[in-house]
Image (tube, rainbow, N blue to C red; front, side, top):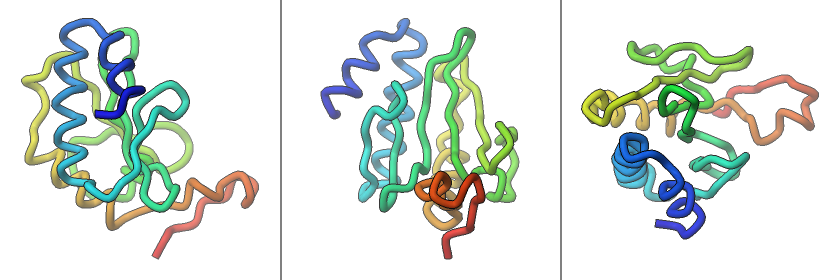
Length: 129
């Protein structure tokens, strides 16, 4: 695990620490070629510089966010924000359904909106082919 992500994990309460460790392991296993780093204070995975998935501690839960998740066409994710992101929130590690998580990660590899260039395009998102 990267040192900056280790520091992030160590700052978490025990339940969130456990959730984040499971998320980290499953994400790394299913996105082995993705770059991972702390971005905007949270662990995020990137493919070719484009953010794909990340997680963050919120006041009452841990949120797993897929930047292009609204386009996945699967159940279990809730729309987040005004772009294409979708999320799932966890309060206990037993809520993580690894089968669903693996499906979402497969979708995340294949369905991407170009967040990397959103500023250059003045807020307009384009689908990556």
